[in-house]
Image 1 (cartoon, rainbow, N blue to C red):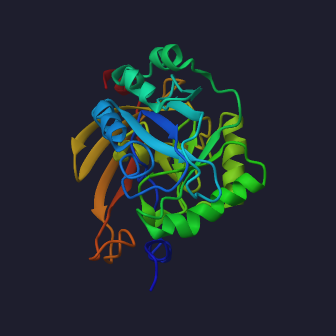
Image 2 (image 1 turned 45 degrees about the vertical axis):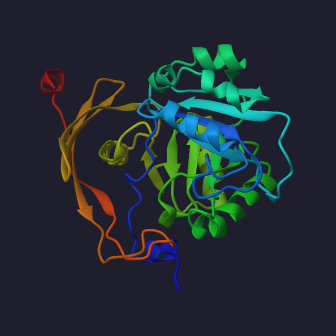
Length: 314
């Protein structure tokens, strides 16, 4: 039986506009096995997991668990845990890290402020500091959510770690199992699908130079799905690879059609027409799905550069 990722690949399903949405990512190291809902079905205290989910709700913060690539037998409660916070909105991109002993400390964070792009509480409460190491390469490997993440994600994470990628981590959930292996790169927050080790290394090298690889990119998590597709379409149209050059400044309309305004740091603007359609033919949206589905896709139908007067008026 074909896996959901094999079917998606064979049908050439586009990956643009499919990234998980989060303005800010909060990542907590949790070794050992993960369940379907990792915050409440891992060796993290489930009461704490539910409290973190509640604290992050409607703040723009997404909480996920991470672990180093390798075997995941229960090795007991770690003494020290790595924690990262990353804000992905262009113009205020940052990645901070801290080492903690008690994950309960995370409940003292100002989640609303984190979602707005303020790292004061993270630094003050957890003694956080700006991350100065390599970019983070977060590979979804949670096979309890979908077997493709285990079959394809774990070997990729292991290969990256074995080849010396210091920022390689496994992460609990990035959405879009059928695009496995899926990858999120921080600090800029761009997600990738159907990733391979050599392309990941190219992506990470580009990130170190402040640039984005467009090929295989699912979008920037800072934007909702129409904005993700629109921003990538403008990048492709004008050949723009600088990480923070473009911003989604306005999204008008509702499903299935939107007009998205994308602005460049040099003042140029574009109006991008995005249409939501259903992928055909029906296919498994995940390996655990009991019925075939027609997942929504974001199709860019037009990219119009606005005249300076029109851009000011918008």
